[in-house]
Length: 449
Image (cartoon, rainbow, N blue to C red; front, side):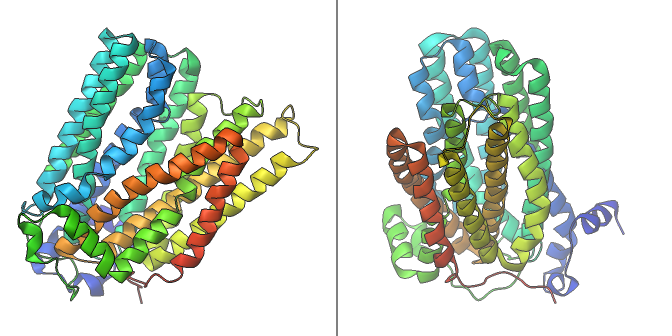
């Protein structure tokens, strides 16, 4: 047995019956391709930790003297900018026979964008530096958009059902290890005392990670028009390759494909685990506690959640990704309600050492549950279709989520102006509705005998 296959068999629980259905050349390349996918996504997660729009970049803005108001656009540009263009770009991606090259192009765009941020951190300052970084972040999001469209399709072509969730989980574990290492390093360096030059080295490391991602992905042996598991799911009409409007195809897919429309609806309702952690931090700060005030503490908590969640949720996603999404949302809503109730108690004191522990544990649990929801959602969309239809599913759902994310984020932010607790309860209510909606999703997972 080759070394690569031995390592892969030790990491992933394989189903020989499913693999025997694959064409011989695809079957032989599964371990090699899967290990490259794990390595590439681990490096990508490492780069993400070094350039997080919710933590690292705001700190860089502070170090460079950028007006604080400009920091408010970082997360919306990072998240929505990588989602909104996907349906528009999909017809172009569908013309590329080897989708891995789309991902490689996206990784190189991200590497160059982060390198530009690092250079700005060295030579720039003030508003000009802030605007330059915002533009670089917008270009970065475009590269991320290309990667998001193509990565699910490459995984679907090279890895069979029953193993995809485990691969997502292993990549998540790797990102958790990186986050813990980075968070501890930042804490040792002094946290709030980090200077722009130190953060520039951090960004340069992120750019190097994306170069590594491009190199690993370029070596994947991707079959053309061959699916890992044969399927009778309908293909996207040839019209997607014509000059017709991408918006027409997006609307038609949402209108006519009931299961896909339900998936997008459920995904929208499950934003509870994605949007609530920043409000927990805000609640901690407004309550006067300091346990989550350091950048390192945030990264350590998210890293520990990823480290534990990757192993816990990967195989669960392969058994039933829809159940994983539902359970994750239900528990996230419960954590939020419990936190709000405790904070609202007359006996609650922000001067108690238990207050710091309460917010830290709540933040950790929500991040852990979001890891489960995210692994389940990514596995579900890969398993629910094949070929070009899968590519369309990923693109259209992400474009729709870009709009929905802005809408839900605006509503929760407006509620937070009155009370952070109301914003959290609003997200928890969405999660509860999402739990019931998720029960209607068809089960698309492979269940090992």
